[in-house]
Image (cartoon, rainbow, N blue to C red):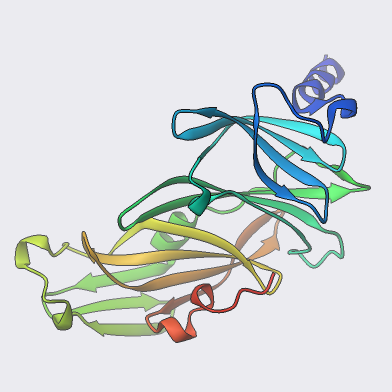
Length: 237
């Protein structure tokens, strides 16, 4: 019975490779990596792509529950690079699930690879908001925001923002901007800190490492200076 279930799961996620690289009826190309022969397909439904398929070097894998916006400005990204120091490339796909004024929601999917095939079991990436809420302590007053990360404490003068009292949050908020990137072969995420609907005071930057069979936080920093923020500088994949 276990063998039967395993075979059934394999059939759900892997399609005959003979159609790989060809146009798939009812699907559009969402993103493509020419160098590595990797293509991401999705069904366009209103303003979202749904029901994804990943053409990975001649094999097609199905991910029916993924979704991403159709805006080219926030297009999905494909990375094929070693991020866990095992000397084998991983497939990393980022999807934008929502965007707007002061809003950017991304999610990331990571797969191990072997002999030009994917391990269809996705590697877990720890939720960035869970990491923030476990490790970052904040306090907000009318004059100042305090952010503590481990034994590091940051204080931000918020008076230059000139925020009306009714618009000021009770505390620093996180979750409106979640942005993933691969920088210097590291999986990283930016979670922006917000003190009013239109005011951001800096970014929590989490660098992941592979530990205990999943990607967990290696370092956590809070950065207010754009010039020192890797997400705003030249990105090195």
